[in-house]
Each structure stands twice: as structure tokens, then as C-alpha cells.
Image (tube, rainbow, N blue to C red; front, side, top):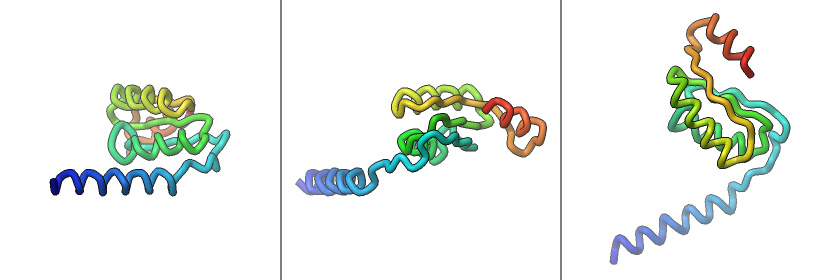
Length: 102
């Protein structure tokens, strides 16, 4: 019984969050470049950028394969163009190449 009440509270909190945090499309037509975007917070930010109307989202991560997989999911879920890029942002040459790909 207690678990049911907890599950109902969590469900209600999620519903309230979704109602009050609807995408505003304020980023329509813009391009976002997100580092550390293959998973976790970076992935969530990429998804939000797509939902906010970004025309394109570049997901950058050391793990290029994972970034590409995440980009494909973000693109499918949000409808924006998303690409995955492998880059180490501590390396200036890789940063230049990363920016050139966007």
C-alpha cells in the first residue's frame, strides 16, 4: 500500500513538472554545441535543446560512438538535426576540428 502511495506521488510530481516546464521554442533556428553529451546531464541538455526548437544540436564527447548513438536518439525524439562528434576539449586541435564539423 505504501509503495502505491509513493508511486502515485511520483507520478503526480512528474505530471506537474511536465505541465509547468513545457518547451517554449525560444531557441528556434539556433544551433547548440554540448560537451560531455553522450549520457547523463549532457544528454538531457541536448534533448531539451532539441525540444526548445534548435535547428541542430552537436553532441560532443570523448566517446564518439556513444555520442553518435545519443545524437540519433535525440534526433528521433525531438525532430532536430543532431550529430555526435568525438573530441577532447582539452586539445585545441580537436576543438578546432569539432567546431568546423558544426
